[in-house]
Amino acid sequence: MQGFEKYYRKTWHERLEILNKHTISDEQVKILKDGAKNPELGETMIENFISEYHLPEGVALNLVVNGIEYLVPMATEEPSVIAAASHGGSIVKKSGGFKAETKSRLMIGQVVLENVSDVSEMQKELELLEKDILKVANDAHPSIVRRGGGARSVKLKILADDLLALYLAVDVKEAMGANMLNTMLEATAEFLKSKLKSDVLFAILSNYATDSLVSAKCSIGVETLAKNGVDGCEIARKIAQASRVAQLDPYRAATHNKGIMNGIDACVLASGNDWRAVEAGAHAYAARSGRYRGLSTWNYDEKKQVLEGELTLPLALGSVGGSISIVPLVSVNRQILQNADAKTLGEIVCSLGLAQNLAALYALVTDGIQKGHMRLQLKSLAKSVGATADETKILVKEMEKRKVRDSVHAREILKEMRENRDE
Image (cartoon, rainbow, N blue to C red; front, side, top):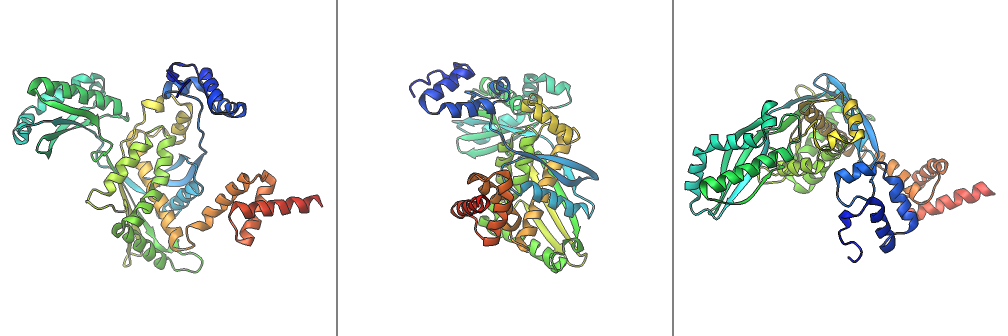
């Protein structure tokens, strides 16, 4: 586009001037400027920086994990997510909280070899080179080795008659580890090119973190589930049945899992970690059987009178590095999370996802998912049609009374309110 040549080399003010000239108004430029609270930081994090996009952040309450209660910062634009997480947490808290564990914590990367004439023979050659490969990888990043981490194992997989994948598992300690792992993988690739005269297609980390699995479980006394005269046993049965549907129907599973990720993404984002990587890995894990299924399971034990829930996820999170170390708000959020290390953070996040899921299923099989959600949506709708803060509360109540929830009716009611006020 004319005028945007070498845009990345322009200063922040120059970029805004170019946008102003071609696409946006003076008033919109001011919005961009006002939104950029820390332009210098923005310039260090992304390319072609123009402003900061702000999401509301709140704190989920009542999350007890392995006997410790946490306040959990969550950044999200969606109404009801934080309320649901707090509600789910409060239900489980009454029965002792979540039990969570990290089964392993290694990041996985792959080097893919192409144009392989004999994949079986190449596999044998690579098996003999495992110790050398681990040394090459560790030599590429000695600082992680000094901290007790480093490359741990090599696995091989024949992908096709001409393609062979080498998987490198690395202990990245407290870091997210993406750059670290990619450095080690590229060194490994160069070694294989030289040693075996092989063609390397690519070398890069995988976001399918199956060697970094975290599980959260809970056991809830059904008496705590009773609501509005509905027996807790019946609610527990329905929650288990809804969970079963998510195992049988991918259409339900997608929404079931989206609800889980509502909480997980919000906390991962607030902690400065890569929520897109977590999201990709989670959905891949949901399809690990060859069929897309719900990530969590809920079972009603009629004999024990308990509802039991479990969630396992690949969670390669870090407590240092990347934006974690440079964004001031992330530092605040880490303090709110009691400066949890990477392992503990994963256990908190997994438990949060299960709490989120419980709240969603509980609402789904009792009052319906819209009851609490719509009140916040109506507040947003009132704001969008121009209601002031004082008018919003009255407008929301009137829309609920008339059972309407669209902008046309909202404007009509707001107009009536103002006309009646002015009389």
